Length: 237
Image 1 (cartoon, one colour):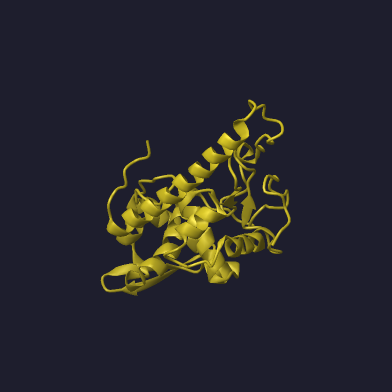
Image 2 (cartoon, rainbow, N blue to C red):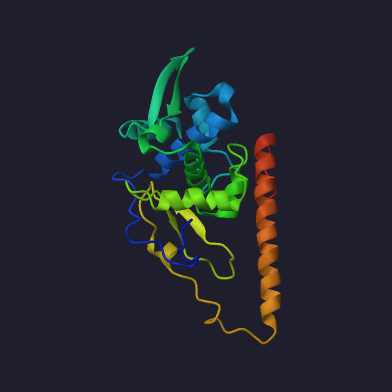
């Protein structure tokens, strides 16, 4: 486990691999990793199944509307880095991923990267919930251990810890397969001591933070159930 403070900026060395992926390539790779574990009977995926997974309205951030041509172009880009495989099955070509071998990572680390590619920056707690259908992490500490390994990887960091948002109890993590964090993500949140608060508001703020965390957890669970049932969740108010 790393002893980096939760609100520390991402280290300067966190430059990621020697290549970077664009948004479509990131989404396609994330979907291939996800579907390998959630729908193994239909994996490798046809182009139609892959596009449907990329354009899901749930468990995706941002929501995309990729065309077949855009998905095919993303597959070509990933193939240049040996990150996808292609095979013939029935009447259509099928596509799989090769991320674990190319990046030389255990399956748990690949799963965490997939969630970050599909959902954007997440806390360790959010990652544990979102990964549940692919791997059941024992606790948040086990998630953090894999994240620390990805961040300290000798061949190049693949994730970075972001500064905590104001009022947040946990730092978020992001993947580096699409390049280093943007400047706006690296702006550290003001410390608790630097924020002027009315007397007696500390306990209230702590309670609000706890409730926000519970709502985020419940929201993630709802999104997962809706994704399994194939229905659209009610947008948050």
